[in-house]
Amino acid sequence: MATRKVRSRSRRAPLRAAPQQARSLQTRERLLDVAGELLGEVGIESITTNLICARAGMTPPALYRYFKDKYAILEALGRRLMERQNAALFEWLESNLDNMSAPSGDQVEKILQATADVTASEPGAVWTLRALRAVPQLAHIRIESHRLVTDRLTEAFAPMFPQLSRPVLWRRVRISIELGFAIDEMLTEEDRIKRNDLLREAARVMRWSLIDPEDAKATPKRRSR
Image 1 (tube, one colour):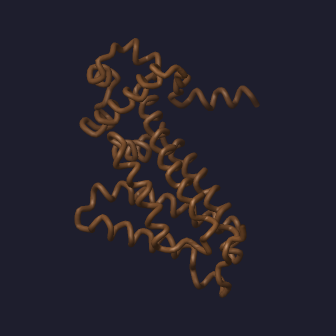
Image 2: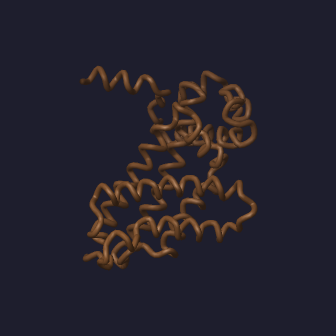
Image 3: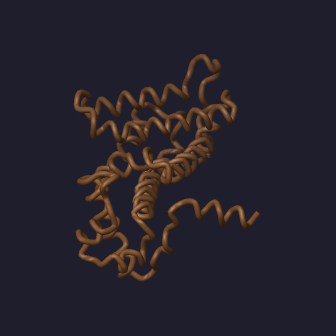
């Protein structure tokens, strides 16, 4: 059993152990910021560790102390973005859960806005999102993150939707999370829909995937403290 786990991890581009000293952490974050900027400039296929080194003013051996190759850098970028988006979502959830009987359209829109704000603040974040979707070696980051969020939201929403079985609720939340991921990209690509309108319409779709009148006649119950 242990052997299979080791082999499974080795097929991915493994991250170097995250540095603990403040200066090393700053250097690692600097490399990720530079990589994000370059990703937006040259794209997934053309970015290289040499380009990153040149932009960051570092030598390749120095970079390889932190990352094995460019895919390890892309993986770290993806994990950082997913973790920051998730942190924003979980913070919102903790602040609003006790007073929520069921997620309203405005509340879902605020969740989408919070994750979109994180994306907008990250260097090259849109290209990082594209890499997570397009590069097979990185797909597990997106899937693992989205399943984590789905688990948390399903646990939070279950008392509000007793008419839905746990597997059905999990499935609908999981699909909504994937839709939110696509909306994050769409915000930077579709100029025929205003940003606020896009977020509002996406929130309506995601909300009604949970509150479907055909499921049951029961009214969603307010979560008890």
